[in-house]
Image (cartoon, rainbow, N blue to C red; front, side, top):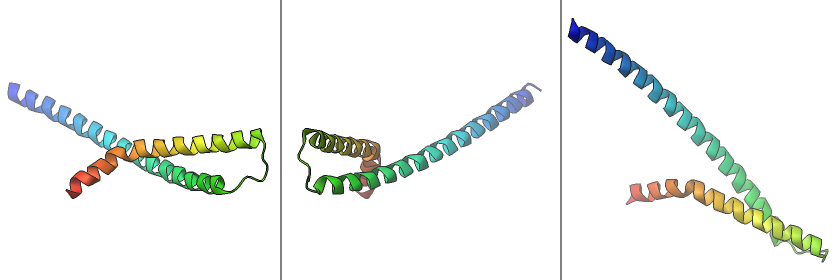
Length: 98
């Protein structure tokens, strides 16, 4: 009788554990999809900012230069965020290829 109750308790704990693992897995996959979408948006915006920064200035004032420097700073920040988010993924890919 004692062994049956132990088996029932362990089976219950196993079912709860499997349920929580599946729940965590789906959360991780949803988060991965969201991060990939954000990286796609960042990549698009980075390309747009790069095109804008390559254009020559037609109005030479301190305000315009400040805005252009601000856009450059945002572009650099977006680039560093993208590198930070993909650093572990790139390392894993390199490890798998080696």
